[in-house]
Length: 279
Image 1: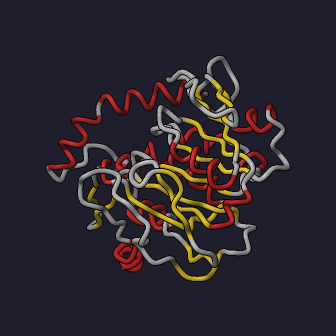
Image 2 (image 1 turned 120 degrees about the vertical axis):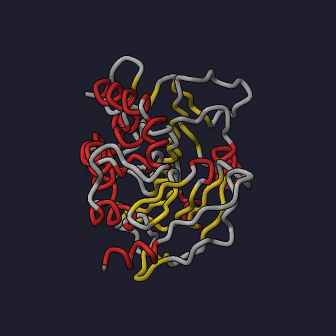
């Protein structure tokens, strides 16, 4: 199943240039996701108010994320798609003594990494097979089921497959999730939305609540149904069992938000989306 989805997704992206051109001309060549369904999914990303202060961990630019102060209690960071940047993991280690499990087949282990970093030369996938390791396999291998764990995941679009296929038990092993969601511009395509994107989002939001949102301006924007939204976003989520989740929505942007690139910042128009849903 994992490879079938990947091949399908690859075929989609081969046509992406033509689709984007059509979109730029105000034309959408494939069946669109219905307005209410699309905007409702986007609105789910709106972060709730949280009782404790948020702090910035990692880079002062791209690769830095906002988390609640309680993150100091985390014992392990699971970090797939780490690439060559470990600023987030190093900051967690420096501040709180947190160990990290780094997962990435595309890079080699850096001999300068501290001993508190464990490296898996595999890709994060939907199941354990060949070059892939799934989240449940990581938790079992390192006996993390009773630990406080943070998942920090930036895997360039493959997050949907991982989230869609991960069991409720596996996802509930995490106390916090920091996640980059890519390719929101493809949410407008009904077949993709219903087969991949919506099941992943529903599985995640069943037990997690966003408490921070930031758009990555490098991904650009998409406009449809009178709403312009970012194509790449960063989310901080906490388990719904966390007592710090409050009624109401967080104020955006946060004072600790930083630009990912030199491009102007992009905001998700949550108020516009809310109004559009009621029209």
